[in-house]
Image (cartoon, rainbow over all chains, first blue to last red):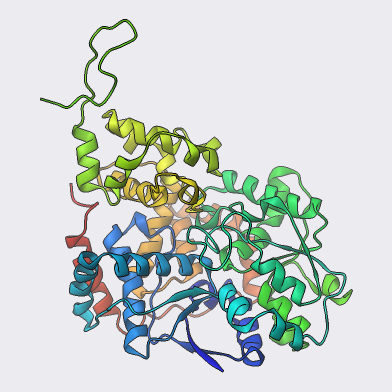
Length: 290
Length: 207
């Protein structure tokens, strides 16, 4: 068993709850022991700049890092790409700029906290692939997803800008996890294009087109189901499909799931653990055919 | 004397007027990550990489050059600075390592504080989002969405909520929405103090 801090983030408490349920289910057999960061706060995501200046956003991330450091200093695993990128970006800045670290610590002192820069922030995909590994994953598969064509949608903040565990231009980690489950990983070029992220609700017209292009590209390359590792991507690509169809005259009805849901199914952990009942577009049919 | 940053002579050999650099200096001094644009060499890779460039009135490259050219109103009023989705395509490709996303966010934050309104909808949503962070320490998605809808006024709010009712209902039925009102994190008081202090100490805000 390897221990980690889980920074689940706000989305996994609501719209992305099926990510958390399936993650907790597969973590156990994978030997990943997840502990919650006590009293964690929102990372600010990519829209906090409206209300807060850069230093405020840095403090949001730093508070979580400081609490993690004070409670054992385990690596932080973020399943949400936006949380991952914000925490990671601020962490690198604090590690590289002593003046900023001092400034942030002066502010953290208001809550009796201090950060020295010892924490490592990692994306869940990184931990699944590099710590657990495809071999271990393969050995746990009881119901291989043979014949299922999965479009592994990577999106943006999952790998960009740091590219610490995968290529920023040609990522392969998620595809290799999909393959380890016995499924076919479909390559589609738009898998690294942006879905609209946090702007979706407020810039619908622009973002509909972004999501349409991604869905169309996946389907054009024979994907029957799309897999992601980010709650925002899952929400934007799944929950808005009906509205996209209405606005742009398309006919999308393709399930979009989290990679951990595919894992739970392939590990034979049952529907409840896979949280397939939380999907707006059912995936049962496609996965049962395996 | 103001330093000349544009071409000193035009194609006819006549002396040119120097750019007014006061706005560029303002950006370097007051805007978060503003100094980073000094590295920009106007290659345009950011614009070519941007998923929403077609929707922007000015590309990131143009924003940077207009800052140097002293075009304050054009830059701070540009909708482009709030159309950044934070996808980091520009940042990974920029040969000069300009953190374009951070600069866009810094400019947008500054513009809003200076009374400009680059994108009304995203500004309203962002305000409600930050409100949740400050009040609760976390985001309650349904609460932010409702506050955003009804931030347009009661009538418009009802219409927006109805427009999204199928999706909202779906999320509710699939238990992807919190039912109870959100409770703040345990140490919300300390977090508020921290955020107040960061606001006072940081750049990008006060006029």
